[in-house]
Length: 433
Ligand code: 5AD
Ligand code: SF4
Image 1 (spheres, rainbow, N blue to C red):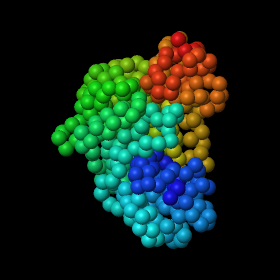
Image 2 (tube, protein in one colour):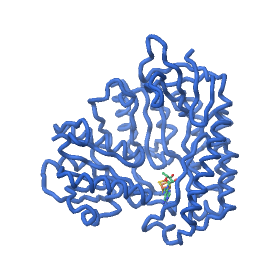
Image 3 (cartoon, rainbow, N blue to C red):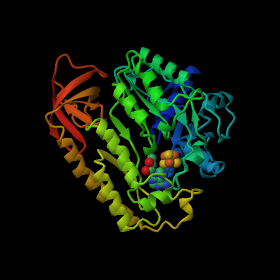
Image 4 (cartoon, rainbow, N blue to C red):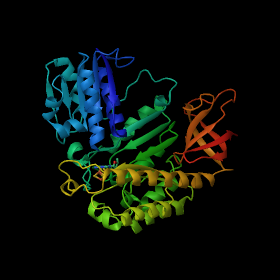
């Protein structure tokens, strides 16, 4: 059959979709050129916020009306359970985020409707990567690699532990073998994935910094990234691993969620504003250009103007390089959902806009410091906005663009040196040296 996968949500979902693509290829199915050309369309869903879930369900509803075989996978399936077929009566199958490995078998059986919400199982295909159709694109040289699944953190607002199950760490040897195999195929950069990767611990006691040291040794691999992290993982052991492992990128995505100690405690985040700052300062003491990005929730139940102002001052004090702002959305079954969702929508909107404006200003300030420096940049391909330019990222995950008129043109995945001539809030512009 010809298949197409439509993915919503985070990098884990992108990775899970790739694994399904690989499993379907291995079972003899062929990736279609697009949704219209496919016999079976699979929608990988997110449920972190209500809007995200509605998008995936809405898309599936439309696809069901086209008469194709339609499957839904991912987080919304686990949350909705059997309700998914009440919302989508024509849906052929639905599989939860820990049983996507069943999809080839479900298609082979062809007995619909079929629901597999799953529990804490480890999905088959966690380490499977598609082999075809990527030549010349950045996807051929960059891969996500799952190191852990599930989450045991239980933050009050978050539905992830309910839908993705308990934490499971893959054996370190399995991860190393997978990355080695990717590097042999020409992959230059891997991004290790888990809800809270710094908590990684292999059954043999391998810590996350130890895993980084082993990955550093793999020939051909140029860069190692990972996401997402909790401030408690910013240990001396991690900083020493950064120092010893030049392939490990100088960037950490460190979701803060709020800058108010009162709200942080209510969220169950297990750090204070001061502890968050200390974690960032530790990274910047090691490398002043170390890039720190974050996630923030605005309009959490009971968030006052004062709490919100504390978030603004914390992001400035921490010198956050980039931030992603989310309007609080109550998720059924979470602790926070039992509280009144009492910040009005228009106020959430306003706080979102204020943080975006702060980020534009701070992004420009922080990027301006890099004017005149030379950044090592991995080439990703033509810039999205201006095809005549080339774009890539520096070790800090900052987007860098340059005129790209060099001959021969540097290949995708190559590391080049770019002298920064201009700073913008979200990008750096320069010339190749
Ligand atoms: N409402 C709004 N944002 C949320 N996030 C997680 N749960 C919610 C929720 N209920 C945000 C957090 C997290 C990011 C992936 O999504 O900021 O870091
Ligand atoms: Fe897990 Fe907390 Fe991240 Fe939610 S916010 S995914 S509970 S670590």
